[in-house]
Each structure stands twice: as C-alpha cells, then as structure tokens.
Image (tube, rainbow, N blue to C red; front, top):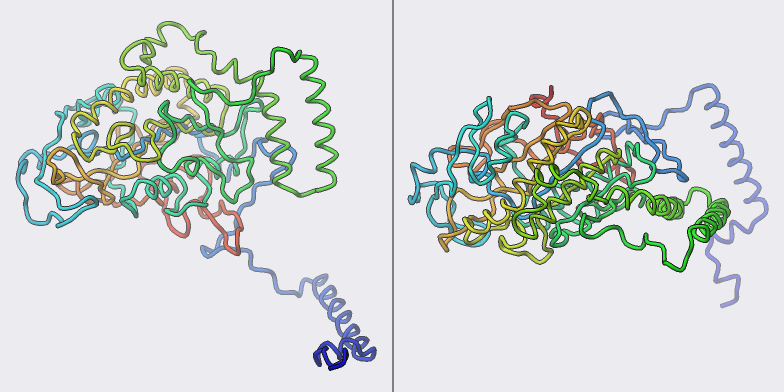
Length: 501
C-alpha cells in the first residue's frame, strides 16, 4: 500500500484545493451571517438559566484578591456565621427533643419498632437518661445533660423535624457539611466565602477550629473547597495548635523577612502575568500573601492570655478535664475570630477519623449515660459561654450561629441494652442570632422521636435556610463543573420561612 492509499477519502478531500476553497467560502459566509444577525439582535439567545428557570449569580472574583468582600444577593442582618458542629450524632431524645411517651413505654417493645437498625436488632424503648425541665421564659423542655445551653433556650430556634439520607457517619458529615454523601464537593463554608469573600484582610475568610483530639470522621471534606477555587477552603487550627509554618526563625531578622516577602511578591506577580486566568496559581499566590499578613495577625488573635480572668472563668478554661479546658480556649478563639471579621468560623466538638464509640465524639452505641455525659462536660459550659459572650458584645446582631450534628439516635436501646443506634429519620439542630426567631421550635418528631412527623425538614432545606439568612439564594449560588451547575443543595431544598424573623 502506497502512502496516498493510507489517507481516508475525507482526508484526501481536504487536500483538494478546490474543495478547500469551497468549504472556506461557506465557512466565512456563515461567520459573516452570524455576525450580521447578532448585530441586529436576531440571533437566538443562549439559555443560561438553570433547571429552576433562574439565572446563576456568578460572584465577581479578582484572582489577585479572592478574599475581597462581595455583596450578597439580597440584604439580610447576618453577615458572618459560626457553625458549632458535633460529630458522632447527638441524641436528640436525651437533649432537646422531649418525648414524654418514652417514659410511659420505658422497657417495652411496642409494635412498629424496626426489626433491624444500623448495628443490628434493637432492644426496648428507653426513657431519656437525663430529666427534662422547662427553661427560660419560653418554657422550652431541655434535659439536664446540657443545663448551661438549655438556660439559653430563649435565644434559640430549634428545628425538631430534620432528617437525612444516610445513617453512616462519614457520609452523614459529608451530607450535612457539603450537601452530598460522596466526597469531592465543596463545604458550606467554601460556598459562603466563594460568594461573599471576607471583611478581614489579615486572617483567612474561613477558619475551621478542629477539636483538640483531632479531625472529625470525614476530615478535611468538612471544610474543603473541592472544585471551587482553592482560595475558599477552610484554614484549620485551634487554640492548642496554631497555623503551621508562620514563625520566623530566630536567625532571620524582621528586615530580612520583609525584603524576602517583597521580592517574592514581585516574582509571583511577574509569573502570574505570564499565566492570566490561572485560578490555582492566583490562589497559591494569594495564600502566600495572606500567610505573610498572618505572621502579624495570628499571634495577636491567639493570645488568650490578654482575656480577663472573668472570661476564662466563664468559659471554663481553668476547670474540668484537660479536653474541656482546651475546647473552652477554642471557644474563646472562635469569638475573637468573629470579632476580627472572619466570614465563616466552624467549631468542632468531637473528632476521630476512625470512630470512637462515644470516647472521642458523640457516637454512643454503648454506655450512653457515661459517654454522652463525658462529651457534654466538654461542650456545655464553654459553648453556652461563647453564645452568651457574643450576645453581650452585640455580635449576634450580624452573626448567625448554627449548632448541628449529622443525625440523631434511636428512642430504643441497642441489643446491648446500654447504647442508642443511629437515627437518620429524626434529629434536632438549632439556630441563633441574626435573622432567626428566638425561643421558637419548628417541626416535630413523632411521639417516640423516631421519625420526622410535623413539617419534615431535609438537610437540603436546612442548608438552603442558612444560605438565605446570609443573603444568598441557594438556587442561584452555583458553580459550573463537569457540565453541570453545581450548588450546595444539589437540585433540592426550600427555605424554611417560618423560622425567619
């Protein structure tokens, strides 16, 4: 076979001069016609709406300054958000969701109990392990497990009819914090900072304060940026472990440091000019520049020694277990970060990427009376002090507080007779601060606390409501990725308007 026979008929036609000129003439004519029709407004408009019929709202982000503040979709009181997240699944029926029928049915196994749950066949109905009492002027019934937080019931907006798609912790954390059970999707905090940037120039826009014991089960998925620009991932540190690699070696003077930073800034700027539009490169440069500013700001914000003794006493940094003391310090750090204007602060109460069965988080499959009590001793006083302190300083006028966990626990015991299994069909979270009703309860679980019964509220609805409170339309806050307009709430979610002021 000679060389000409290796070329396909289509290929040979492209080598024909007359064919080439003929096709080129038609092509240029088509381009000219399209331009003429466009200039007269006769071309069909490209459909840039999403499936809801709404146009996506793309934040205008300067690659050289990705953290600069941006306007919200509409005006709302909340400009910042503090998320207090409790990995392991807090038992709603032992904390905030009072079910008198559990006491009536204690020790029984009435019809309707499932034959098997997450970890096997269930045991009998169990009354709450702690007594419930009315709290505040609203008379909200909360348990003695969390008396300090219960005392603030007049400031809280409880959602009692939440339900989720999974009963596994990693997927549950992913779903609550990213809107998807799978990995690879941006976190809530990344979406917010992508949309709004930050008012703070010398601290990250999004800070994740991990538990002193380590990260939660899903690790950095809970505060990652996934396919959003890398600038918007959370920066993780806590009062015990400050951001790494910010300290200047003792042999390196401040003048040397400044001259080096200035040189790097010039070199990075020249490099970026050669690759305009490279978001990853711009994000790395912005990250290095922010790190330079953080060398000055972080030591100041993390210096808790300057806080009055009364604050340390109120938060509990000087009493209880070492874990409680460290968590209390992180609570003070969270308040200081909000004061500095950090857009999103995510505070974790619980950890352990490999599980823990109530020892390192709220996952109490056995000995729930002891394990939940241990976690509550760590969380109750410091968290209540944090919320009370923020209210006293006026921070709740523009800050939304979200207290959340991935799912609830069953109203009956497991086969071991000492723990409660996972319950994805009903659990409780609460909101407080800017834009939400106070001393209010929305939705109800059934008489046992087993399933959402009145106004069932999905995690999609919950996240849609939080975004709304920050002035963001969850249906229009999207990012085009792999052929799809992705969003925190996927293709679901409705704003729970009844909880709004």
